[in-house]
Image 1 (cartoon, rainbow, N blue to C red):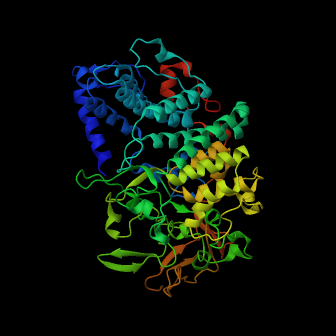
Image 2: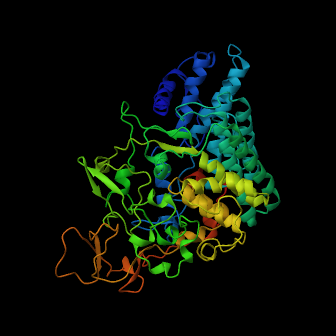
Image 3: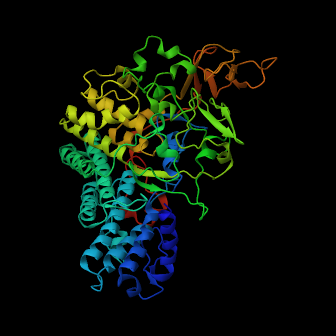
Length: 591
């Protein structure tokens, strides 16, 4: 359970023991060996120790839930992202063009040749290294597009340091080649801590990579790569199928109504479903800050789901909430009833409670923490002790079986080969866990016009539409959304209205969780008297308003214009890097 923490400690030791690098982001320094490299490369223990250093490439423990809070279409935050403001982001602000990790990996691969270690063992650890090189390049390609492909530890005078970028087709092929090698040579198929790379984590990443690039090429037509999309989509389906057929993982169904949320609040990764995780450690004082981030008026971004997204959660009988007459004027306490069980495991609603100093108390949305009323709980522990700092002890999943099922279903749907049996095994299984009782075994036949009008206007296939609905709900706040929008070519959704719950009238206190206790009251003019325990929220300014002035959905930051342009599907190369190497050339639109 503490393996990831130990990995990072061992990585520190490695810097002392092995060929360590004070590389800059420009790949322009040679390795400075502080010990004979044979001490590392002549034994399996040395190889294992070295590969622990690669795990720093994985996201930081607070990164997954913060990623969607920073850039997604389904939440409001304290301020609009600079990336979406006119002139708010340029190559001067751009970051991420960092190559130190790649230098470390390539050095290992180039030097893992000592015949004192058997070939099979060496190939296993080279496989781990190539997994991480693939992971590194995938993240870089998503952000910047074309990249220099570098698979050797370059010397300081190597001309490749000043070469231009290689095409995304070469980068993609190279990523897949690395993953195929890793899948063939990594010997571990499963391990109990869920914190090390295994053969099936490799297949999981391959399904993620190929689905991303296959759909990117299909929908981002300006690249002229549509004819190559299906091959990648088939590889995505095949890789996901390999994980499914292995029989190692399954959807967590323990605890029934909390089966979903337990994946995100458990200290130890739920090993039936979690394939890869970062874990906390009391011994090493390693925690994260999800509670603080989501329950503070000042520390985090006050991320709040918007109503347009909450509307996509189905009713428990499988029908659409948005097909209910008058759904747009249903108040919060009623709109959340009888919905997909994941809703009550994602936001504060209904009978949700928290513990404070050992006392259990009702916990409706708190409007000093939320702008819209839809306050996240997915990653939050229920004891208020965790709210005041980086104290969270719950593990953070980086890959889980549900994603594999979604990857498989989407790849097959995009290929036009998905069957009823495929649907039942993937989307049907996910919805069944969420308490949905119909539409589980056969492909959907009718297109949801709400989804088409509010999200994906170009989608006419009901199956693809429902898979996108499912992906948004199942993987929310796990760091996928922005790049899902990128590959589907729907960045314009990032400019949608930040709308909240329906308020029927001003100066009328509302009970948000149906317990008979009044919780919040919205006003324009400061009330002369107030009720104890009620939070009073002004909607008379320019930032927070009601859609119709005195009633309607809450709107947040309508006074700030968010702008999307298609060149933003790629980030700019940082300005300083172009000064060092003009051959890189800037991404179009960022010149």
